[in-house]
Each structure stands twice: as C-alpha cells, then as structure tokens.
Length: 150
Image (spheres, rainbow, N blue to C red):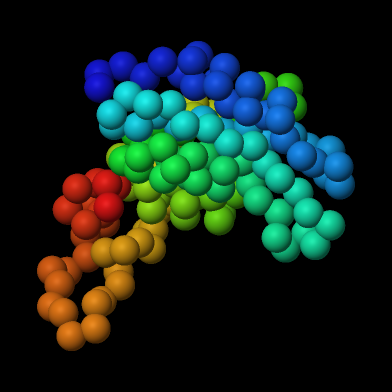
C-alpha cells in the first residue's frame, strides 16, 4: 500500500470517539487502524470506576482487528474529543507494536512516525523463548520475521 489516507483514518477514529464511555475523565478517545489487507478497524475508550481496568481506544481497536479476521496494522491514529491526534500511551504503544511491528506508521501530534521511533527498543514476541525451542536472535527491525503479522 503506497499511500495512507490519513483523513479517512482520522474520520473513522473521530466516529469511534463519539461512542467513548468516559464519565470519569471526560476525555473521549477514538482510534482507527489500517490493516495490510486494506480493512479499517476502530475502537473507543471505555472507562471503569475501578480505574485500573479502563480500556484505551487502541485496546478496542486491536480487539476489533482480531474480531474481524486479524492481520497486521500498517497505520494507526488516535484522536481526542476535538478530533485532534493524540499520542498513544505506553500500554497502547505496546499493543500497536504487537500487531503492527516496527514499520507500522502512527499519526502523532507532531506528524507521522514509525513504531520503531514511537516505541524504540520495543519488547515483542521475538523476545520470548518457547520452552525447549531454539529461536533466531531477536531483531529490532522485524517482528517474527514478518513485521507485525503473527
């Protein structure tokens, strides 16, 4: 895919943000991602009175990715209540890396950046050794040899 339609992703993230459940922070967030197969997936934040179990918009987006057939994310954006791009939190950066790899592009407040810059030195499946299995050394440039697709 040569060109990312960032306007379409922002529009989808904005639509998702309108469904956010955020009675405590009053900070709605929507996220949208483009898969390598051309699908757009999305999610919104869902807060909880037990703050630790609150779900970020990117969590919902990754759930939608898996629910709708899986694949690899190639581009992601999260927006606030004003439909302005916001930075994913640390937990969400980890989720995006897990399902997009180091070359997944993220629309940050200052512009587009690859996950290798958004989450440098990321920990991923390539770092886990299966019991009794020999694996090739981890690479900072690829995830499981296919840059994000598990």
